[in-house]
Image (cartoon, rainbow, N blue to C red; front, top):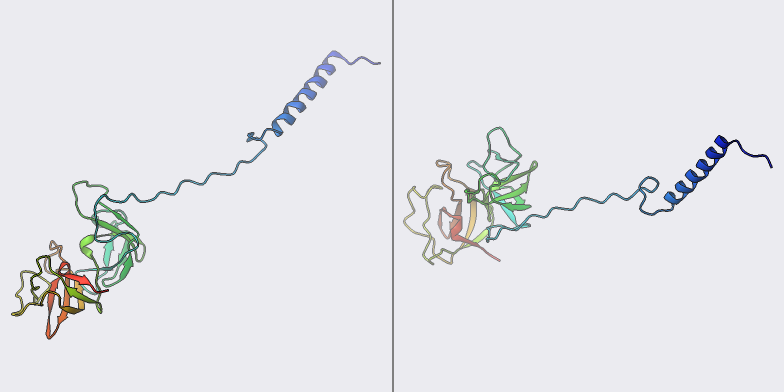
Length: 212
């Protein structure tokens, strides 16, 4: 038998050892050098419910309320007041939308306003006082907190003159208009124009209850 040169013998032994190590690694289930692991999808974040009862909840339908029937309402991209020049989407008044999420102001813990995420031209957030439960053509029932009759105002403003006759509590009315106070943007009431029998005027949304 021909003896191998010491250097060649060392190289041959190293090659055999390296092949054995690679074979062992290839058979190891947890080895990421030879076995491609399946990527774990990131967890889906779900909104945290607010610990209060809100006017709308996720999945409810609401109606966009504006200062004018024809002027689009700008919605911020995050829950909070609109920052000039930083809009997230636009909605036209009287558009019926679905609530996607509910939140308080994420930048100001002292802001008690509730904000709702909706989809129009894109996703954006709208304040609760800009989202109504009613739209034109809906039927509703007068239901005041103290069971008194509801004043009917000549204009969508509680400072305007009221009609001589109120709309009786429990009366069924037809909604013919929905708006915010166009003369006072600080007024957070939603005004509904209704036909109550032979009377026609404006009352507060909170004085109506849905029928059905």
